[in-house]
Image 1 (tube, rainbow, N blue to C red):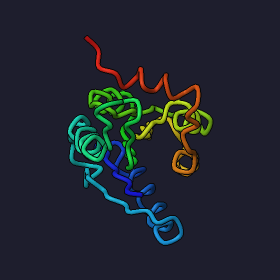
Image 2: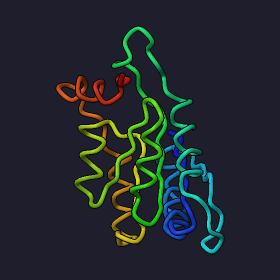
Image 3: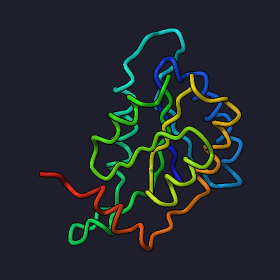
Image 4: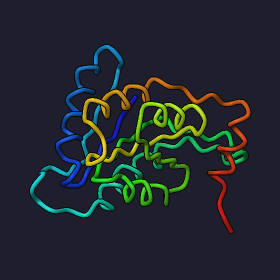
Length: 162
């Protein structure tokens, strides 16, 4: 599984910890870890640029079933980090078939995957203990989508509006 990460300057330190944590699992879990920036905690950058970088990767790697979009699925995962994670989630969710979830604890991270088939985890570094954030990443990556009754609901989330 490929994991794409991005952060603004505020989220840089937590993103570094997440990258380091995931790199320790590369052999055991078969992860490919890709850090798309930012590269500094001191140089001010715009979080939408990094949300775009990750969301574009996730969107581009979507296996789209053109006859039945409800059967489309994403084969990659993204992780975005900024101060609150609100803006990252808002921007990433502009992309078709991207389901970016702002999570604040282990249960919200788990349910976003299990019930909503989230493919991007958004973490607020100013609101989360960093050890908890790493646990949330582990749960997010380990939790499969339940499908079943949730499949039709996720299809409604992905359906175009208008």
